[in-house]
Image (cartoon, rainbow, N blue to C red; front, side, top):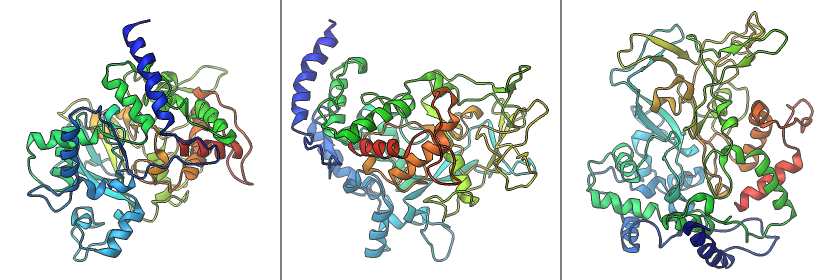
Length: 480
């Protein structure tokens, strides 16, 4: 037994015994209630530093627009921003700093409105990578002079950042102190924050957890125990029969990308890499054609990437087009196309995304792609005909067209307390999210090797999960 294994087994047994007092033991209780985020004494920085950081987190810093970190990362809502909270603040005080013009539907309107914010969405303004341009449908470059674009995104919880990262949906922040400074600059319109203040804020953020079990993992990591040696923190979590079945469904359908109950990293790289495609200059996927066989897409392995395009940028696009009903489809999202170049000179184009649709029917609203002479679909990385993107995701940070509309794959710990879901709040409930995974996401991940089941309702799509499996999975996620 190695030294780390001895520490893990000894300390793990001790801490798991302590966890038994932090978890509910009644099998009939559906949800582990954590009204306020738990805090860890083992987080980086002293307890006093974390306590001081919590004060900074809750108070507007000098020179800002009156917003604090907690204005959007609401402590009583698992440090996220819920539509219910926004509506309550609006009803109480429309002049609250939350309702700053920077997050108005139209910041230049004489009387600003906040329909996006009331969906829990904030405007995120980001610079284009030097090898990208914005283009129109005709392919003309229409990049703004400041080379920036804006997207609408939800506010992620800070819970468990003590052992996660990089941060934000696109992974653009690798340091909590830099993230805090950029948030003050972008959302609170403040200046440079003294380094000690940023360090205290980061210490507080590292002390916030979705549950005592998440704190257990973080504490062992702080002691230098490798993830592979950390005992399963959920071993003492009492589950009823439905929740145990849901755990099995999680292992089958979720773990490959979302990680196991200890890790929050990609588990199956073959599944991950099967969703990154080589692209032609027109933005359509390259296919390998073998006589007598179906064309297969050419994959581009990404061995160090934790980002993935599983189609949620596409889902918002479909909601905007009226194809599917979504929680966020009542508000307008941007309509972008992009050109990627070989380098910052922007002289030699690599590809345009999304590609101009070539549909099976020829109708512009058809989402079914036409087939080429070899029987391969003429389609971009979204795998359906798509006129524009509402958010290029990780590609806006990396400049890599294979990461178009890819986002960070998060841990699902505490997910029951972070609705609505996905990077742009497209799904209101866990049940909605699981339905979409079963009907539209998992069937397209061929590398998972999961069979299809009959539709849940007449005229519906075939699904990977049965109605009972979906119900059981939701039950388990409510406990995770």
